[in-house]
Image (tube, rainbow, N blue to C red; front, side, top):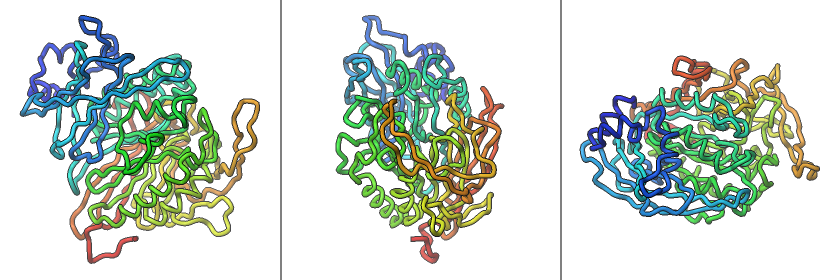
Length: 512
């Protein structure tokens, strides 16, 4: 939705022209995010910070509006409306808090779960607390059932704020370019802001939200937790900040310790599954080593989730969003044998179509892979087909590394030529730095299809076309190089189409 369309939405909802002109009600205003962090109410009420939206359990009918404050506030709430009805409904927010272990400062997190919405409809909202200046935004609910839609994805963003660890101006450029594509929602594939290795964790989170506010207030951002969301002392396994800042769909029976670390939801005919690979990865990549933290609960949930999705004839596609990788041909972190052992066999068994990752800071995609090469000690994925432009995902899963979200430590210059991969097969004893060093093996990368040697930054856009009953459904994928600020600096690098039979085609045979 462009700026003119947003202005029309807000005027129709009763937002004043003065408020729009001030940038307080217009999510697309370039200066809105920094101003919102400094505007207090007349009695000194703390300002609304980090406003963002996520889908609820049913994205067609539920969206969560979230924000933070550095202290408790009076009556945190959201006014919700539509273009033809104004702000006619009030939803009170639930407030939780966490204490940042590094600074001993509190962060209060407010979440308003807006339920009972109509599918595929634009909504407007205002965040209010005490007498602070309200913050406005828009979102569109997901379609109910098979329908076309767009989404985008990248990982490993960091912030554009000097002083934050791994900061880079590219972390700001890419947000403007995502907005140009105007997706229904965005997937964030882990390592959001690198707060765990920054001098001030809370400030770094705030910098990240402020940079992304122009998108996160207009469309849901659905994250997966990466190793740099693991913050020492913040909760029993280090993810309390991430879990507090985002209110994500919770699987039935999940406990508070792991809530938000894995979850799923359906948009149209696509089932999205988000994982936290630190549970199974060998690499010691966070502030604490938490491999095996769920005791196998995440894997058991994943198998049940994939089995259920493949039995549901309303679902055509299964897309997994996670951080650490099954494939990579860069001399960087490396692919992780733990994920190949625990999760990849389930991707094969239940015909996952697409896996989106970060962790390696470059762009790479695999051929569709299914099974492993015979006799491979590293469980080398086996390419099932080699067409680069049109890919039948009933033959295998396509893996995409989208780790060029903005961090100042790209890995595209570390790609092995010819392609090979280093695999983390375990870790050694704890060293002087308190970390377990990775143990590596190497393999030929026959699974590697396309790599971007020349450009470090970029994101992918996905256009889902449900097709017609009895036929095929497709996802058109475009990976854009982000070459600097402005829409003119997003250049398509890789374009291809995924296809599979619609699952409501009873006369055909699926890959169950």
